Amino acid sequence: MTVRVMLISPAMNAALREARFAGDAALDASGARAARLAAPHVPDADRMVHGPSERCARTAEALGLQSVDEPSLYDWELGRWSGARLDEVSAREPEGVAAWLGDPSAAPHGGESLLGLCARAGAWLDALTGDVRVLAVVEPSLVRAAVVHALALPPQAFWRLDVAPLTLTELTGRSGRWNLRAGRPLTGGPGDREAERGTP
Image (cartoon, rainbow, N blue to C red; front, side):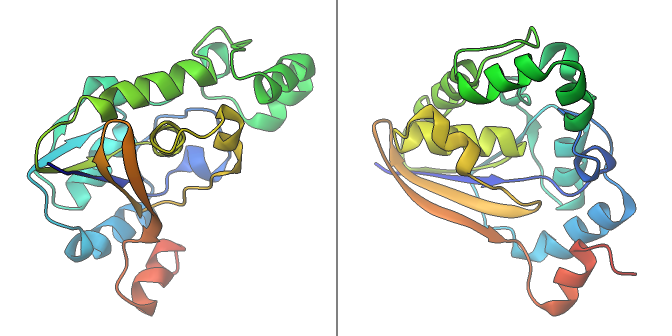
């Protein structure tokens, strides 16, 4: 029995454009437009879920998905850093940011460590069983953590994985044996790519 897990990263919003930590905000106009254009390119699934953030919920809606909220797929919990920009936090807490980037067990912000995030993503992934196709709209942090867990990568590999808005990352297999198909854009042509960049 093979599980196929299709992870879609949500569309652009203001928090992502400003490089804010875990900034939960609605999609901006170009993000919503890009998601609507991507809707015809979303693969079929037996089960559809989305993370509880506003960004994930609105992306799923714009993609035309009949998905349900999955509470365990919340974004990386970054405590007091949530909503702040990386440059602001780096100026205010340089030692804390250095520890966060260098030690996967560190949580200087008072939230969740990288190890905790990867364990949470992995627990959800490994609980999926049977011959089923699951589609989930989740924050980029969850996509990266799921890949780290599935491929048994060292936690530091998380920082080397980039997940662009509205990309599809696929994991197939089962607990302990997953194969990866790296992220690809949910777009169908040049017009879609222009919309994703925010071109009027």
